[in-house]
Image (tube, rainbow, N blue to C red; front, side, top):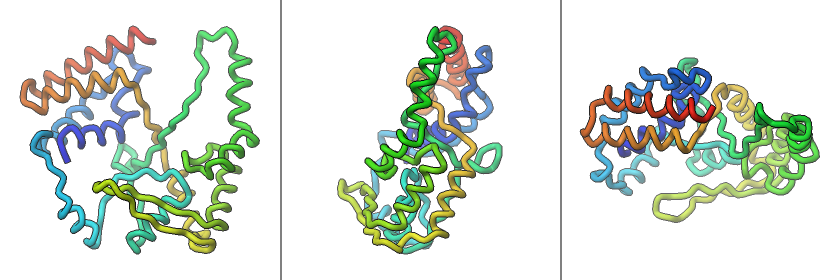
Length: 249
């Protein structure tokens, strides 16, 4: 994996700890950023990194395989188990709480503090959060786009997973897919409990700002290519992010 690839993964995993908009005068966790940059810098340069298909195949036959993955449906974890014919353990990136499982939202809604129509906005959002609305999404996609935020609808999804046939697809680096087919009875209650535990243990929400992200990536690249020292890069990131946050509060 390349320097930028490793750094990008760490940036996603520690997004809520790296940037704090509530402290605009000092928004960047500089100590954490230094650790992330120095760790990623131990890997190969981007232009020297070549995907080794033979090595990847060898890794998949070894007793242990570490994968960076996202669990979006009740079938996903068991699809991996079926494909590799081995038990799957979920281990989050280590954080301050030694947990590391994070939640990523693809559709985030909020009401601006300056809104003149907060009641109307909340009426709209609460409708989307209602059981009827969440059930329409569940029945259309069976949570293929992610888990419902309602526990009652989530349990309905788990019941559907155990009672219905489905397929799990895993993209391969060669451009193809590996498929595992489920039939009713393949997924058991104890399997579902693993997913419940995973969801309940997630204590971090991934935060994302395209503008702040680009600032960090642009400056990090200058460290990775040797143009600047880590202290210089961190100082510039702190200054640029502070300016952005203060201008967009």
